[in-house]
Image (cartoon, rainbow, N blue to C red; front, side):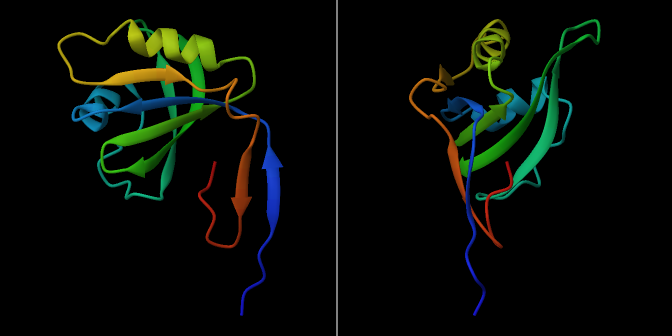
Length: 114
């Protein structure tokens, strides 16, 4: 029987959901998100068109059509604005949930890696 470890990690969280959420993020982030299963996550970067770093994040797939983009404290609004800037003709909603989520609870050893 594996023991469970709980830790609180202060991070900003931007939720991205809707029928086009995966393809939308796939087109903007540096990491290939197609192989990420529900419950999994991947390290990724949001870059400006010229390659300058906007936000370093972890993209966590929490549902078939929902992702949580988890970043360092203070960068949630920057991440949300950067994503919204490219939301053109896609069915996707973007919300900075940083204020509502004070921290993320992680349970090991099968925790969602943030």
